[in-house]
Length: 190
Image (cartoon, rainbow, N blue to C red; front, side, top):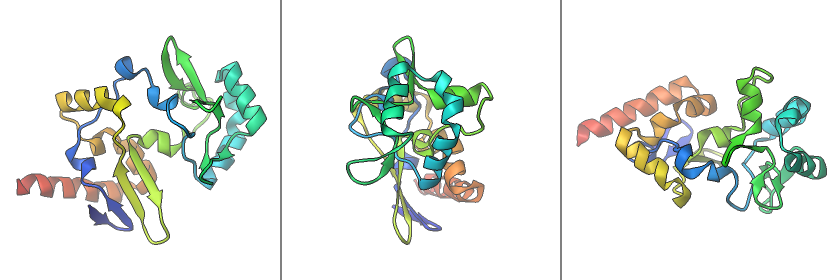
């Protein structure tokens, strides 16, 4: 672990490799698990605002779940998160064949909205936990992502490079440049 500003960062972001491999995992992170995607309070307001624009992109089951539960929910641990369909799929998930995709991101890609998706989804496999004085930035190892780890090793892409856009979105360009410097310093120490 090392500190960057008001963050404590796991060295796994620098030492582990990762590149999403949708052809292998079929977007399992959006349909497996026992909770929706973590959201910030600001993101709950964004979801409420953009829902009418993204609704046409969503599946019938997703629309039903959102209209029954809301555009966001309080999870079992009290955290804000996306609603689920039958306690499984994220309500915002759509499918291209058997591959899970994000309906929010589809609307973004088509220029309908200007918000890509929840930052927690954009950051994955990085998870951020906010505390009073700092944020913990960790790599979340999940066996459904083993194909992504293998592809990352093959292409030699560390986690922090794979999620660069999302890290910049969450922490800013200066923070990311500092992270790159730490990575370079560690590499030179070997």
